[in-house]
Image (cartoon, rainbow, N blue to C red; front, side, top):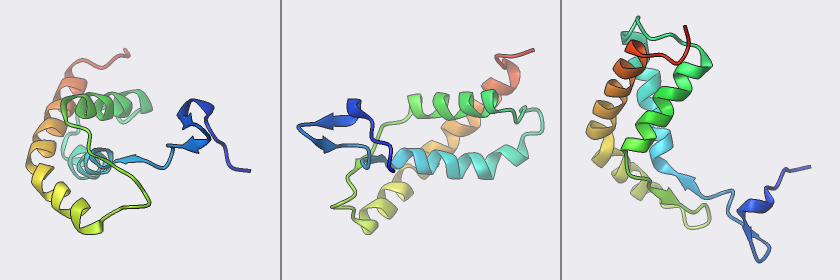
Length: 102
């Protein structure tokens, strides 16, 4: 049985399939950049902080699943790649210096 969040429905239509393309670009950058930073704790809290901090500094790029355009996704990813890398690097440094745990 598939879980359906009633908060993500309007008139019986679910928006759970709509995706923020920026999330994928951020996670790709995190996977690539985190191994370079040995001072970052790799606990879930620190990883969540890097993820959230990065996403809060970047524009959301939402795409609906039915009209997903693969070419558009690649173009958007390439256009924001440099800025995303800069933001993720900055978030890693911030979280490394000031983690929310001891």
